[in-house]
Each structure stands twice: as structure tokens, then as C-alpha cells.
Amino acid sequence: MFLKTNLVFNKRRIASPVLCDIPEYIHICHRNDPKVAECIKDSIEFLRPQLAKGLDEIESPGIDPFVLERVTIFESPGSKGLFAYLQNMEVQGAGNFKITKLKLDVEGMTYRLGIHIPLLYVTGSYNVSLNVVQNSIKEYGDFHANISDIDGQGVLQGALEGNHLIMKSFQFKINVGDFDVDLGNLFESNPVIRQMANDILLNNKAEIMRISLPIIERKISEHVLDISNRITRNLDYNEVFPA
Image (tube, rainbow, N blue to C red):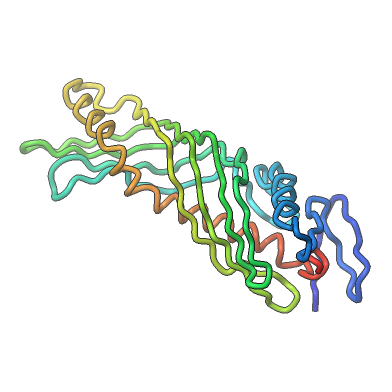
């Protein structure tokens, strides 16, 4: 039986054998429309402000900001060298995403999309260990980072369960134009070691991205799946996406 959405603001009612309430932020797109991809893209853009701040009526948290628990940014081979990770991070700017590409297989319920995010601003805390000669030095503190020109490509796979579209998986990969990390007072009492640690981070951006991007991609995938299913689980597929 189709569950009626429990919304607390404007609704519009669709006539069908089972009445349901369609929230105003959901656009009706016809799957046989030659411009259906454009319709869905416009619908996502219309929904973007609500995605950023969150949708209380479906208990969906906002994507701007979102939280990352821990990301390793550098790990030297073996027991010597630099080990650094970031934790308790708040990421701002994801709500400014733009859909750059959308292709869909209507019958297969496969949605291929590209997104662009101009800038992410990240704050949190760092933990750095530096092993040099016979000494092990550890530092803790706060940091901020800028990540710019983020381009992502994803494949969202759905399936019908009853009358409801359920998103089963979201495979997502991102490329980053550049990033800067400011570790604040890292090794402030020892300028030589401070410079050494900063040089290691600066000269190993590719390695930092190789280590950290899979964690960020996984977190974004989890967010997209969770929010998508919170939106679609109480909506009749044939009413919001008719032929």
C-alpha cells in the first residue's frame, strides 16, 4: 500500500486510485518526454536550496555543511617520516553544486550525472606525527582548508520496489583542481621541523588526494543515496514520473 507523505508545508494533490501528496519541491517529469533529462536537471536545481539546508519533514540532513569524521592526508612508508590525519571536519560549500551532465536510461533506471562544485571550505582538527632520527614528535590543533574546482562523475542505479523508486547504489568519483591546507600553529616552537612538515604536504598533493579522495567519495555517495531514498520512498513512481 502506498504510504502518504507526512508534509508540513505546501502540497499539491494528484488524482489517482490512491491519493498522495506531492511536495512543491518535486517537479513532475514525463519519462517518455524527449527532454526528460532536462526536466530532471531543472527539478534538481529547484530542489538544491532545500538539499543544502535539509528537509525536516523527511528527516533529511542538509548537505551544506556536512561532516567528515576522519581523513588521513599523509602516511609515509614504514615507521619513519610524517603521518597526518584530519578529524571532526565541517565541510561548507556543497550546496553550490551544479549539474553539468545528466544522461538516463529510463527503462534501466540508471542515471549518469556530472557535477561541479566551485569551492569547499573545510574546518576541523589535525593530528600530526613526525618521526625523525630517534625522535617522535606529535602535534594537535585546528586547521582550515580550501578545495577548489571539484568535478564529479557518478552513476546512480535505481529499482522499483512496489510503486516506489529505490536507489540501490551510487558510484561516484571526483577530481580536484587544487587545494590548500593551513595547519595553523603546527610545530610553532620548532621552525625547522614546521617547514619540513609543510614542505612534505605541499610537495605531495597528488599522494594526499590519492589517500583522501576515496573517503570523501564514499561519504558523498552515502549522502546522495540516503537523501534520494528519503525523498522517493513515499512517492508513487508513476505519479511523479509518468509516461
